[in-house]
Image 1 (spheres, one colour):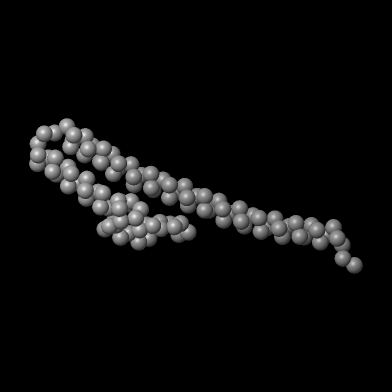
Image 2 (cartoon, rainbow, N blue to C red):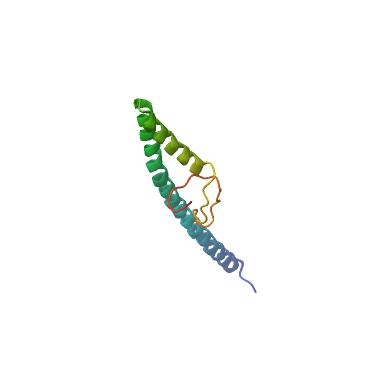
Length: 108
């Protein structure tokens, strides 16, 4: 004769094991997303600061050569940002990768 209480306990234990596996997988994904966010934040801060400084230099000078050099630099950065960047594998596994995402590093 089957013991309904024992079967219920075994079923709950099995469900608990499954939930713990799911919890572990979710914790791992959250950790990956936090790492990814940190990388992206770091990768965006530097170029954003450089762009800001380049704009300041462009606006504060009357030197046509410096204005041209500043604009050329800004155009180069703009081209990287809108999709001329061919970086494969930049995103961690499990996250979507878009070819037009701005990234800095060994991507060219």
